[in-house]
Length: 527
Image 1 (cartoon, rainbow, N blue to C red):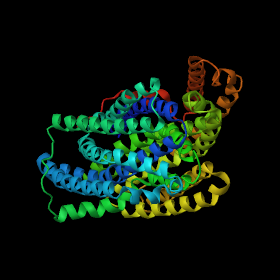
Image 2 (cartoon, rainbow, N blue to C red; image 1 turned 90 degrees about the horizontal axis):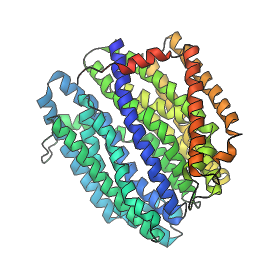
Image 3 (cartoon, one colour; image 1 turned 120 degrees about the vertical axis):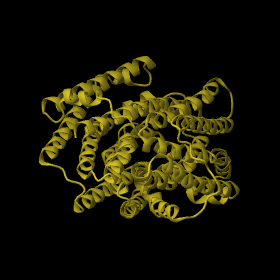
């Protein structure tokens, strides 16, 4: 049990650290986008164009493919061995290539009509809509690169290798930053700038694909793609994958619903995007990292008949997720305005943009623990080859999101969309937890409940202290202060918050730090 927990913690640390690097570089990338495009029409057009293939990527690749692929791949590895598992992977990947290629070609041809329902508010501005169509046509082949990358990453994760796939987003950001740096000093128009950033997006996608392919090749597990045939195993895969199109990408679906509604208001898409990027930092490090490691871990235990180990892994994942996501959420709420100001308020990004983005960030952050819970709880269904139940709950979440967004948008605009997204996430998380518990697949001992209560208390105390400390530091955090002074002040707040929070969870016994460090230092078993 201890070695299993250590393996989970260590793999989570590896993925989390690399994801942290990716998110930090992502902030640099977004700061450059904010500086050269601001929140005007070209920014709305590019961000909508980038989100369109990104939605399909998360649905077809990270959502549907991974959640259906990894449990069946783990079963093939456990029962049949490496070579039969590699042949099975080749059959599934061959179908993925055909499906994504057909989708890409059709969407490119019919882009003006396909895009219209996703940005209806742009239709009244022909120039803005035409630019969005052009940029989306440039960006959409990114879907092909990312779908293949996700497939190779699923193989690596199923084999127990997590680092290469976690490093791939770092490479994307490096390439995009390299493309954007010349724009800071150039005199290009907003349209030319947006086109160049879109080209950089495709270049980054190609670089990611090359990286993970090389890792699979080093592992000696490259699937030999061929013209696909439809057989019983392929049918079973798609029966699992199709429901997961919604369930696996529900967060992105809800965010994209918000994008559709927000297209009716100027700059709303940009406010949502920048706020989304900020709360995606802890979500990526915690939720995505834990979900990435937990699904193959649960799948291997369940296929091997080790139910007790599977339950222990899920409870450990829940503990580490709440240990990190609750303080992240409360800190983002307490420091929303200073964070947005320091990271984005320069160039074309104004103080008004800071206020609007910060208000959006506060409400997105209120749902952060729910987004992480979804990542922890869904693998409990997926690993048991049940994609239908999470899909039903995802559908309920989408309905809640749409209804609340439409109700709140007329009065609260983009802030109403953030509120609706968070409420929908909590509805989804609660339904998943209740249903897993009713099936006997989710049980928390009384001691664990007590630890979670202490973690919540520590996070709330830390947030109150951070809010109080930010008041005297306001002149140093203002956009008029030198950038290095702003960064130093914000960094001091972050360090103070971490010291207060981890000190509290240690002295209350919620998570003794020595025990946590011992788990992180132990090497995981060889894959």
